[in-house]
Amino acid sequence: MNTLEMTEKINAIITTEELAAHWSGHRGLTRKLIEAFPEKEFFEYSIGGMRPAAQLIQEMMDVSTGGVREMAGGVAGDVAGHAVTATSKAEALEIWDKNTAELLENLVKIPVDKFHDRILSFGQYEGTIWGNIFYFLDNEIHHRAQAYVYLRSLGVEPPAFWDRY
Image 1 (tube, rainbow, N blue to C red):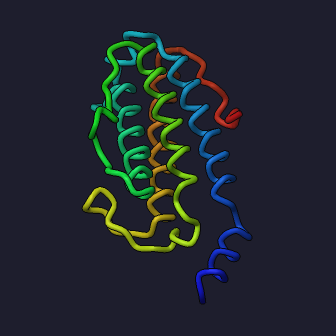
Image 2: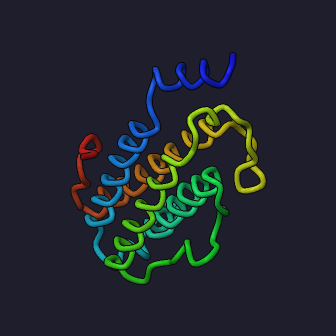
Image 3: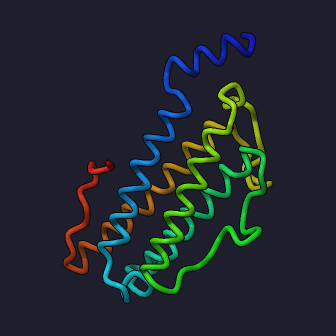
């Protein structure tokens, strides 16, 4: 299969812009989740040895944005101040918004004909670009679900999981 045929097949399923719009919905829902947390509990509350929500959110940003940055030709990880740990919920939301903008900006820079290329994400995780992107999105959903459990156990109604827009 040549590059043009592969591009046509990939675009027949979903475009990069549609993927970015879908992910943007997930990022918006995670933002609503952050907003729902009481300030202190966002940084300190945990159940069963799991990390507090602030640490889960930081991981989402480090993995997703760093990984997509790398796929778009940049450097993954905490370089040039990309990964910044928040000290307040307001700061976490501000960082989340900047991080989301960078993620979506870089996602659409990845050429669609490269999605089946094999890469070594973060210098250690081998797989295809599309496989890593799906992992990053799955990671966000997984950690958001943990934070949902935290909110429920605190007696706080979390945002509706389907309300991604």
